[in-house]
Image (cartoon, rainbow, N blue to C red; front, top):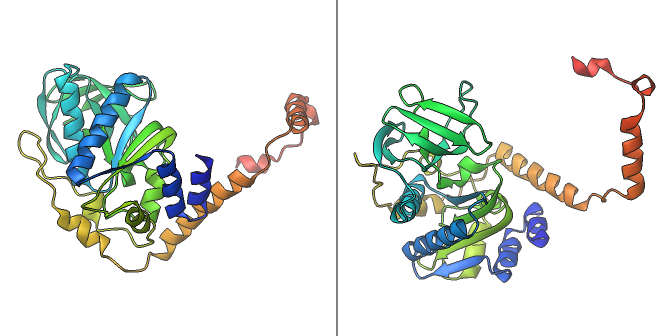
Length: 305
């Protein structure tokens, strides 16, 4: 989808979404609830068809993330793919985890060598400790008494996945998304993405494009970082549309620093797309330079300082 990438890089979000729509990657449903259910069905079907592929579900608010995580876990439980649930205390409240659950790390931790946004699979879950196989292949032991910044890792907010790249993404669009968040959400994939929306949020794809093309400031912290309320059994409460509606009506100007960062990202992608591809001659010259004896090379040792 090079056309969509070029459109995003130059700020033409509506055109990028149209390109995805023409490629069959935009899916409408009558309601957000129906869109959420369709997303989970598509995610589950692709997960079974290509289990080796990496994937993530993305949306705007933590409340929606909690519901998507629960729905995804339910699919695995129905197929007998999860172990016995144990209730654990996390920074976001009580959660139920089991062997083979997906896990998302929410805070950098040097001792575990994990970052905010790291993903893995729980190999063994107890009330106080997880044995986790990270997606980079490493194995870590997580002591929940000292590090409880974890949540289920099937779905995450767009904000949490900046810098992440996976094979497939599934995005649930809600009115709180803006142009920057949409760009992040729809550029996390290597292979393919799927964008789902409900007509109770967006009347049609044209309104979807207009809404997701808006430039506006970041929403309230609750949209990105506040924990989704949970019961003692780790079940998220039913989300309120008030948060999304309130955030979508915000009309302040985006802070200059945030605008500069978005512009820089777009400029970098545009430059990369327009850069000439290396020729056979340039590749040969590069190989010859690398093979040259060390004595013939010039070094600026000051660069090491």
